[in-house]
Length: 360
Image 1 (cartoon, one colour):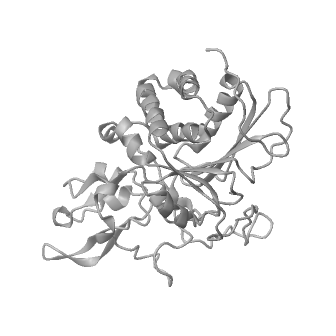
Image 2 (image 1 turned 90 degrees about the vertical axis):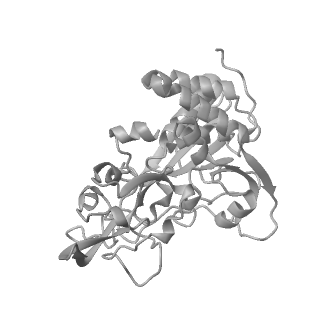
């Protein structure tokens, strides 16, 4: 396939068309950035660069990926973070409020969000100043196609851009991850097509409803030169946000208390203190009683479902169940504030067990 020469619809004062992806580790934004970087250079006839920014290189930590495209006759000599993107991809709407994903978004920005809500609702959640908002239910579409969220997001980004050819995007996916994971190629390509064909778009003018958010580097109170001796962590867990709802990819454990024998296997295998046990009585004897899961911390790895001996825990679709009816706040980490503190434990990890294939 020969590289088509595309014309960039808009560039900044330096001649660059810039894309920023906002996500957390595990949702595939880093890989998506690499794919878009190669797409520009190999199939769109552009000069292209890509790099990512993340913390401890583990699932659940904030991830930003940056892509710059320009005319093939122009060199790219900068590698600074993208402050005012022409296209912004937000891999889960719940990232808003936890990290400053909307910085630098103006009237010329296209924002693609993984959400099942309407653009008007999402604009209010994001407090979006102005620009074009594109909504795609990437989570459900990924489940239908038996692929990952990032493939659907790539398709939606291509459609929203107005100039990225669908066939070129599919071709680069075939040439990269298709060769490494051939069994997943069909689902990946279907996911791209679903994302491309199922967006909802609305443009918002600067109506004064929400202010423009200037780009600022994220700065923490503590760093390598002023952290307490001994590495004391002031947070209640191991990452900056303990609202893990953005890390789940559709599946959650459903707890049936009447089937629970309080064996503690779920608590032993859970990496994030999800299951809440208190002193009580079971079958007439003193015992630690399982109150149920704290969905606040659950990242949907389903390890607990795999080890449960009585089917007291089964896999379910998050959007089909009101999990907050059975949600139990973590008994050890309760603090003065109400739900969803701005601190907390590690995020999503994907089990590689046999149950993964069954759910997929």
